[in-house]
View 1 (cartoon, rainbow, N blue to C red):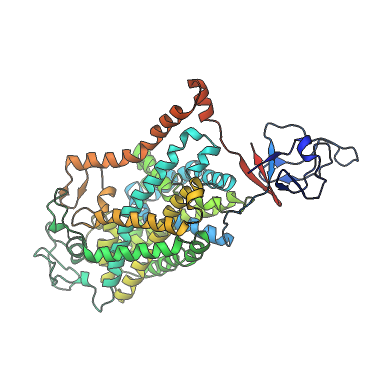
View 2: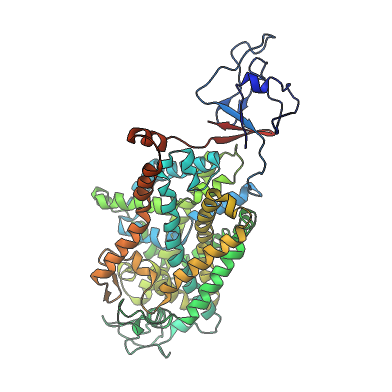
Length: 563
């Protein structure tokens, strides 16, 4: 598309103020020539249309040449925008508030000093997480591009970062949705009078199964396993059917159907863009808060709940002297808010140009952090109840972290509450909706990046692109449904153990290779860029770090490009 500099007297002098004109096939709104009077005003994001002092008199003033030239052009096609401001806010909240808020924050909090952990967590949020969150929203809204093409307007040589982000998103979608498949399987299994993980009389149970909620006089030993643990490990995951990573086994057809249904929901939620996904999040982003409130009230009324709350919040100030606590606080806030994954760039790129993204960053960050804090009460009131029933210390009950905390410990507690079927149904529905929001966001980040980078191929074929992305992620997720390989080992401690199984050395090497496969995109693209750019090495570097394309600034019926 042709563009015309606003400070070009020769080109724009034929256009009278307030009139339309057409020259060389380019339709342009009337723009004041450099010698005409200009009304005092502010063009979005700091680009000023204010003339030199004395604008109130009749003396014509010229717009001084600036380091940033403004170029006017007619925009042939508007970028899609959110239907409502609340659609955007709920989408961002739904992305940031995910399963990690429910299981990871409470575990990290009590492990790192209880209430004392809130101090480093707050500091890291104020000086690290929220500024990065705001920066990504601002970049996306200003440049209106996804995580690949945005680098053309910032520093082209780092475009490989965008490709790395897309690869990481594929990896995450391949295992993250497996957790939702488990939750869906639990949900389906909950529609019974007696939840199947409350009894030791099922076909998958072993002789070590011990049900201390049965009311009988039972003894809990080191070899004892609960019905909930055996349901999770032997019925859902079926890890006993595999001898290790060298023996993957088959794919659980029940879980395969569950994950197929999950991906079907995902596809029809995002295939039309933010106009449709923005409506879906009104359910998926708000429903978890209703359930959290119900579970919080129920947990607070359980016997022994106070023991869990005390264990959760009792401050251990000595912990603040440990470096690891501050590292965990930084890691938690960064993983929770989710900057750097390209999602905030994508979501903000569909905002109106003058949207107050600073306010959005503060609101959504605060909601996310408060959700993590409240989720701790939901989890630990139940853990206190479990400790009361087992006649153990809360620390013994709270050993599980990650998926085990939800699918074993919490599921077992729910199963032994009054109205257990009801609470099981709403709890696993909550897990599914929490996961769906984050998956919508992660895949939208990839889709937006591809659409903006290759508009000539995919701009009219979004539905096909979304279908290709979803199908690829579905087949990638099938590897996580085999009888041993499950995603929870990715969240295990560094020694890479899952229950009684220790991962072999080659699996650790494989993990590093998977991680490297995304990071390698950055130096690879830098090398590629320097090779294809003509000139001396110095000229190549300068060209590679210089923005290629202007940033479009909306101004009424025209678009101003900063070049």
